[in-house]
Image (tube, each protein chain N blue to C red):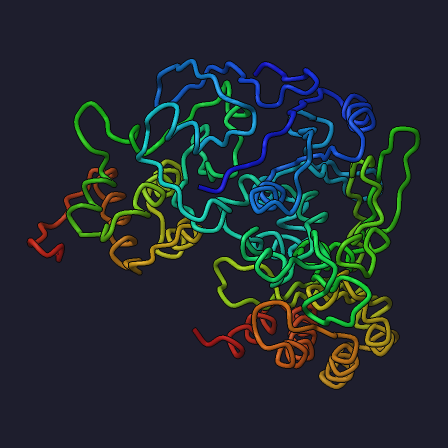
Length: 340
Length: 179
């Protein structure tokens, strides 16, 4: 039986108390939200925090609230299942709803939180293995070893950003608030991530993700498309979040983020530029998909052959943009890719 | 729940009152014990199975306040004050739950290892939806793996149980689980 390593369990009753506990316990402590990512990691001894500061009692971190002006505040401790029932998600931001529904399974979504999904540990075929398996290859750079087995010459860890909510929330222009023991800051979600499979977050260990803030919908239409082996279950090996703001037929702003092709969500800036200032036509969609293909640089460390995953970036960006143009086109594209 | 806020003694046991299958139970265990471990090893409720233990297979599914969760990824101490239902709690005073009867009648259990998880996940669905569609059943059970791959029988058994619960007549079945 795979068991958790022992730890000291703390259950603060306020954010302020949580911050003082984490500061008091030092770097050996970790926050825990739903536990669906951290506990498997602890069972495989990727992480062995000496203290867990459990956030589950903190009401102030839960719930969804409409903000004046049409924005939305999502509490990071909201379970994924609870968000599926929220009208500002389900009805007003269907792309976010789709991304959430694509995370793991309904049972896991009863436990997992949106904040936990944003902060999800990066994944890799050489990392997401049992302790014994990893010891047999003398471990890897991300945990206890020195070499990156994906590319032994690599100076950095190449583990893969695998959150479904990250690409779509980045595309929707989400911001996050981080509270530390002494100060707090608010940053664009995309600035939370960095290109390093080990230090994949710019969040300090004693900082708490306290708010996820979304701008008003305001003419934005969006979609999320996800590639994985088993539709019922798996992490993404490619995720495309696309959000376009229209004025009439004209695209005024475009944001496209690719997930699972790197250690952080990758913005397809040049592809976006090809869409702005004109109507969304088959030609502009094809051109943007071509350009997005060039920024997708998946490596041989997840499911599926990586060269094929790169090819699929073009297909999934194309299909995501068709889905933005009309949901019916999006469904048609899904059927074409997967007739079953 | 008693907050465990002493320094160091992380192996020290916490005393928790759990409500399992309608009965209050006093249990003592260290804070790092999962609900799965406490159910099986402290309470002797071995109906809940341990499979992958990483949240991937669903065989350890139990209900917390009526909603399915994975007991391998839940800390037992966080379940204090909540209603835990395991496969042992599905049967009523009048006998097995209609899901259990339907699973048995239709041979929806082959090796049976995944069955407790499927039963709990299906019960949560039938408590919520009087007449779920096949699509809704597939979705609700998509976190439960059956490596004998008997999914079709499982879906049919859930539909049959749903009909029984609605008070509808269900047809007879032969000895091979065929209607």
